[in-house]
View 1 (cartoon, rainbow, N blue to C red):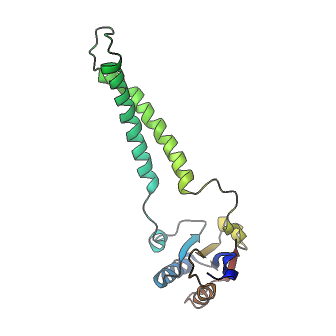
View 2 (view 1 turned 135 degrees about the horizontal axis):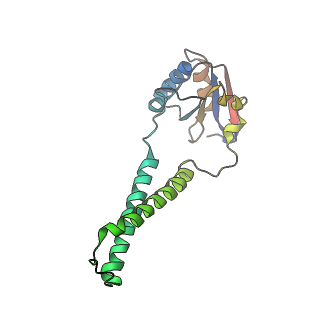
Length: 182
């Protein structure tokens, strides 16, 4: 990356239709133009596949936390009642597992909720008070009817002019192409 490109976050293009945006993403991805991201007011069918988005990671984090919380609490109670403090209470057996279900379930749900909250913050890279995407002219319209494509300048071999050239010569041309400052 050249010094004059170091101050840019990437190149943005605004499109008129979701179909044009999807076609542009597919074309740029085939050319290997860099890290792509799209901004749209509604989900566009096929966009996740076109962008190469991985599966939902947050679900696996939640499942692992719930299992850890449930089995961890159950194991802790079993240890406490059988080996740690084995008292005979009301004539019940030493290992009376039905009594362990409610606190184990509560611990599983609490740890799962905490893990989902922390995992979401981590995966979304939050808290971040400002993002270079906010420097795109007209980005506030993405909550209503605007469609944007962003090619991020993350690699050393990112060529701003080449990306702008490819965007300008797409079959369905974008409404506007602009460089996004950091």
